[in-house]
Length: 347
Image (cartoon, rainbow, N blue to C red):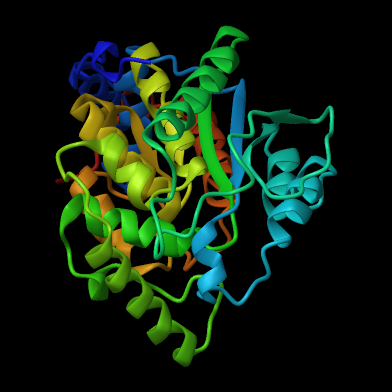
């Protein structure tokens, strides 16, 4: 897969401006719906229409294990990745329940889960039984890094070919806040203290250990900051690479993509490094609890719609945003205008 051949056109703001004009004419204070108006104007810009199409939506949940988990950086055991993948297809995880409520298809893709039983309900693109421990060696080979991106790209391509109008991305992977934090530090050069959070609600002692592990790994791994594939190979995760690929495909096809939290944000930073125009197609569902999320969204120039102190992952925050999108579509279709009522709000 030649990442340099992915062509993504820049999003033009003109239709978004027209959408804002339409919202301003509704019988309400101008800009009164705040972030929701900014969200829907961005969707209009991406789709290049005032008649936004959001009914067919798919959440891609990429699942993989992480070798760095063996360094005791997480309070949750490794086998939970496999259990939650199965729990998701059975409809009982946070993302599965919210998706059912919000009429969203959920697709679980195994890109590297250790010990996951075969299932017709899970798409099998397993690259390996988890990454290697990047404190001791590179997380994956360069070929595996490219393959991870390709998996996400091709899964997204299939969903779009089948008619998806919105793509959402989420993940399952014990230890992946450590991986995402390390990868973000490698991509951006920011100090780990501005990035690293408590992940799976770890103790203060384990949190200090987590920072030490990340800093030591960054010292030990020799990476090329200008080469996104090398960054992914040295300190990344299979599901992060796959989410990056899904972002690139959605952007290439001109389709809005809703990010979940911190892990998805870091995948977007990787996609931005591959093709800067990709960020124009991103909707940031929420501001994750992880400190690095705010830094990542600033670098992506994406303002989060929601700020609910979420730290679940899975794609749950992205799916939660669908209710807000549906609400805005109802407003656009059902409200009358100040012209209809023959009055104006005083500026």
